[in-house]
Image (cartoon, rainbow, N blue to C red; front, side, top):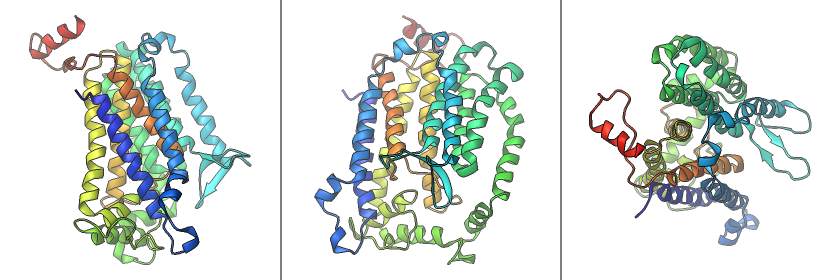
Length: 395
């Protein structure tokens, strides 16, 4: 019988295959010397990225979580993840290794190899480990303000702030996922809401301090007010989606990728998918993304270890929210942001680390029997159906 972990593995493989094909399709040119063929796809950089991602998925799926996470007090290395992430995020501004693309400093260049690493991807997943460790070790006081939720938010704040300088969307994503993990650990919602004005103020300042972010916001409100300027990107994305109709123009036959739609291989790849594969292809991609989330929820619900449960919750929240934000942007339901569609938009660091994080969910699935009931809702009355489930898990 198909386990939830097997379902995640199949969905990840499907998404990566679609990503490789569509990234190469989006890179088509009219130059006959650079024609896209089956051989060129097999030996393309995106295929290498897919191989690395599958390797990360396989390695992470065999992680000995029961030994590593059996005692949060033994995870002495967990607090070091955040300062190391901060150092990596600062390296993007360092000479020689810092790499700038389109006026944005988000990458570290490995000298002599030519490959770049996106430290925000490392920090995005790494901070979840530290936060889950903190919430588990201090579970008795996580519901307090001064000794619980405040230190937890201070773990996330420097990482989210540094990322937000160059990529506001990813910074907000990290902060949002952290709040979900803290609530799952037992933090009080009213304590989190007390920080909401501060968070909104920080986002407002970040938007007002960057003219291009203001232009993106005004373009979202009315893209046709400046169709050749700030609204151009969103209009071209919507044109690509509309041109696809039911079954698309056909693989490789899209038109918007030929100099009309910016970032067609990365942030706006879903628009190319819609144009070439139509609603049918878009529905297939959405089904794979939803499959990862649903299978992941099934795995997390059956976990009994608090740390593993919180880490799994953070992984699923981050993956699902990132996909949702990208889809909203591409379809014109949110302002344009530089946030990728996981496992589809071109990017070696993103593919590898996302696949590795989902591989941890597969490893979690191996920790409990397939038919282990979900842990009870803390709000359920004692003695109800969920109490029976808890006794079964304990047994």
